[in-house]
Image 1 (cartoon, helix red, strand yellow):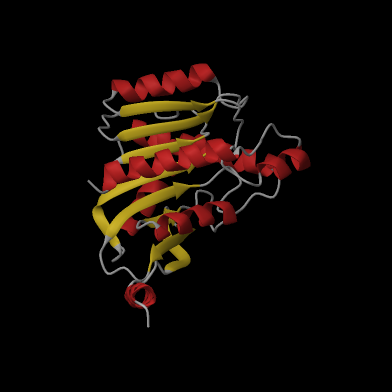
Image 2 (cartoon, rainbow, N blue to C red; image 1 turned 120 degrees about the vertical axis):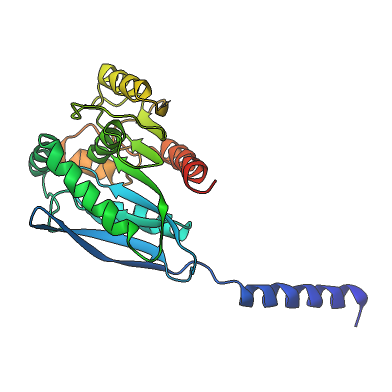
Length: 267
């Protein structure tokens, strides 16, 4: 047998042996219930069942549609990358809106009663910290659209997070008594988003900076509302909404968010 062929076979054997020893992530997804104010909330928890080490927790706050497959998929992605992700249920009983009118009603009800919304978030955070897979001293929150507005207000309220990340989030301020926040705040927005008021976004960023947050706002040229959601174009057509998926902005903002999570939770 020639030396080159023998070397190739040995190399393949080494690769095969290495492949047998290395196990990829085994993402486990399950319903995760928690209660507050006599109401049961059904979140979605995703984690790597092959991992024996406790990992940082990440709260995910859904779009105004509710706890649907889109936000659950994001939780699965984060679990595969070494986080324990809890997609929270802001409406109760895992309720999902079937029409924009319902979505608007559900999300408005939440934001008009911030103390109750905060209690739901605190209950979710407390339950997540108690999970054996979670490193309880590290936690971040990520939100999309309605959920983006929620996580910005979480930071403004001084809730115990290392990072708050918003994707095309509504910058409406509902916290009336801002508190110090020394974590990272990253706001990823579409420059052509007609649903995000630029003045309100600037005001939110300024308020967060005033209370000590490390704030960065990134505007993606050509991106509209819901630019991270592959279903945005279909929803736009069905309901005549100013939404559009933007693959470039989606990829760039996701990579930026992962770098932020690494900086905030893994250092």
